[in-house]
View (cartoon, rainbow, N blue to C red):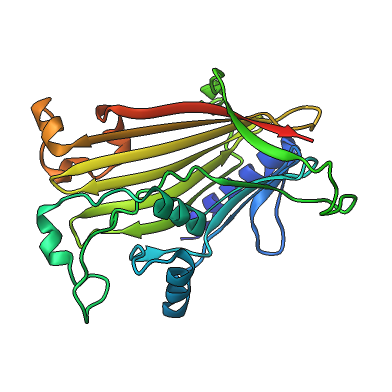
Length: 295
């Protein structure tokens, strides 16, 4: 056991050494994250909503339906200190997107089992998108510094504009050490043991850039699979000016029937990991945007 602890301590010291060599440092006071090249990257992970918080969210979102497990205090944020830009990810904003998109419910053979899933004392008609599919691709804001005021007419604004730029993902190879990595679950629902609905965000920080993947993964057993990926990439600028950020959104979707006709397995057990099957799902939407900050 002592050897195991020694190896773990060595790995931690190696990570700290790589971070220090890259000009970064770990956040203090129990915070999980790093400060590097003018960015603060921080993740927060807590327990699921309590009963009272669950009811409060239902009121705020004007719904009587929420995923089984909502991690309301979980978040990932990336803040550019000089410009004040903050990109962040949380469950509430994602569920706001679900409400606004309001997709029709997916027809499933097991729907009869679900009529009491939300309110055991009364029958619930499944006339809402119980898959909690969201178009959410992140939130952003400008944090005003001490030298700025809320009434300042020259405040920066944020726009995501369509572009033809591509992410330089060569930096994500094994050549660079990973200085910080984390995965944050925002919400999850097992669809009454008939599938999975899961929203997560992962971040990776290297000496030259950061990269994140926001992924909504849906599998309704025997019926439908849906994958909505948002990838965001930022190369660190040497002058620490306004950051250059590229965001790619790619939605894939297929029915079990259509996959079976192409010769793929029809057994839901074959699709437990989206990493192994996402290329089998046809693309139904794709766009690339870059972030512009104007004053």
